[in-house]
Image (cartoon, rainbow, N blue to C red; front, side, top):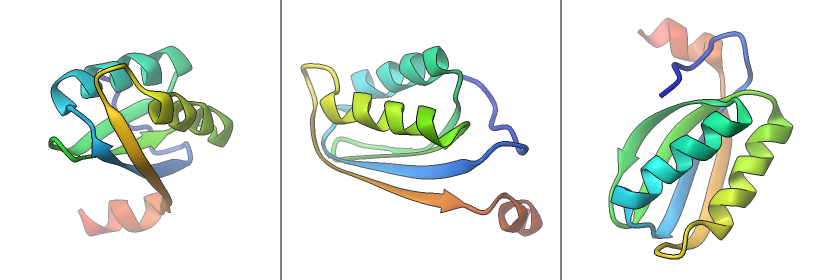
Amino acid sequence: MMALRADEPRERMTILGEVNSASFVPWIRRHADKLGLSQAFLHASADRIELEVAGPAELIDMLEMGCSLGPIDVWVDEIQRRIVDPVATSQQR
């Protein structure tokens, strides 16, 4: 897993549905790595996966599209995204 880079735009992505996190999380990691995106998983359960990704917005869009199609054993109902303010996040620590 790549560490989040502070110098790149970051977004929080929440994936909702029947997401079978045991297989989907490694799938997401592989695809994010292929796109050169850093990621950190915040939550993973049978119905929700939440992660932060950092990198160019166009590549985050590509990851979202891939996740919406997903592997055969998941069903994605919705993907929510929001921009994370890296300055506010670093000040909270």
